[in-house]
Length: 265
Image (cartoon, rainbow, N blue to C red; front, side):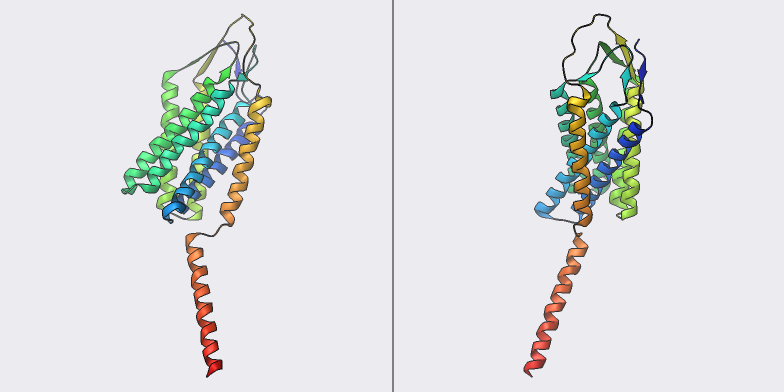
């Protein structure tokens, strides 16, 4: 049995991974809320951004946390195609969830289905990412703990979507993002508690890439995407603000026309 350490670098890895999960969730839920007040292609674009934000946020959270994961007696590497696939699965499945909320006619049912799909997407990303792990040995899971990790992801994702959609305030969106961050982090570490590693004494070459060769650059890139997109969304006007700008412009035109009529008289 391999001795595992989930926080070999101390508190920075879980703290940073939680921050990335919160940033992705906050951006995604904010975009979902923007989508609900938009129509046509604008709604679709906001939902696509939400899926990319939440999916990349939970993926980044997982692999930042995995930087702190070590197994005594073996090095760790990652299968590159499977790692990329885990990112795509996260974005696509979460996308199904947010589109269900964005276009569902029955709000309560849409939130339940969206939460279920989003939670399953979080869990699928985690276990597919773990399937990409390469080490000198085999990885096994405790089934009951795996089920618990999926239940945590689904329950908290549903609660986060409900809070973001039903309350519709900036404070609610922030609280929902914190809940989602807790959900993803708890799901990750609950899932990792299910892991048992059996070392193989036969020393063969491991395929794949080291975390610093592949995962770190991709995580930095996705983290930069999240922060830059967050700034863009924060600075872009809401539908209410655009309506207010149009109303102010129309009033200014009316005042200018009235002034011209007064001068003509």
